[in-house]
Amino acid sequence: MSESFVGDREDAPLPPLGHEQLPSTGDEQLPLTGERTVPGIPEENYWFRRHEVVYRDLLPRCAGRRVLEAGSGEGYGANMIADVARTVTGLDYDISAVEHVRARYPRVEMLHGNLADLPLGDESVDTVVNFQVIEHLWDQAQFLRECFRVLTPGGELLVSTPNRITFSPGRDTPLNPFHTRELDAAELTELLEEAGFRVALMTGVHHGDRLKSLDTKHGGSFIGAQIDRALAGEPWPDELTRDVEGITVDDFALHEGDIDDSLDLVAVAVKDPVR
Image (spheres, rainbow, N blue to C red):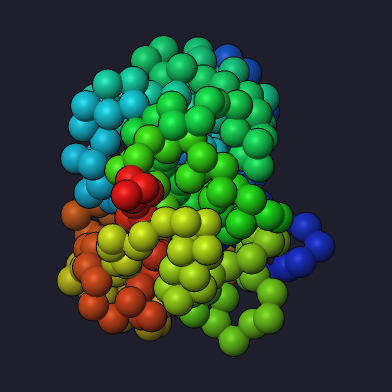
């Protein structure tokens, strides 16, 4: 359920990064709504790769395990997990996303349901994946309690979410109108611990050298250059489109240092066995 950045408006989302799509059904591409990112769209490629790198780097933690992706969105991530996991179950509240995943990614067992009331039994999965979703939820604490319930002892919850400090700097409310509450590292840690988890790792997504160069090239902020075009509703310059389309997962880095300067937070939380 990964989102793209849609601009500085509380009342209604802007067209996601200037790209328009017709509604789709079945195994066609899902439309961009501003609430999730999807693969295969040049103007969306920065956000897609920024999300994809987290799947890639945390994939080994899913190897051989029964995995639930809570808020699976378009399904590309669940399909990546299916390469290594014992089983993969996807869950989403959006019925169009559920139907899309069932048609396009047959290795994923797809369920329709509410993340505040997970339709799984106690201690039924080894890993819960929740990337770029928790910031959309009204009751984040309830969702985390549900994750704790369905995980086996020793199981892991893998979470990524925009870092409030860098995503909506200086604001009391999230910049993205689809977000209910954004978190910094300390706030995410507190929520996880209150739900019963032990935070084994808190790391962050950062720009690598190539993206730092593109920040400089595009007036100090490569992200800002994209947002400006989305806000203006104007065609993208060819050079900006080429730069965005050329981004790969290798242009991002996950590391624990400078966590408050990270773009996205990435946490590994463990349900320790009761002794």
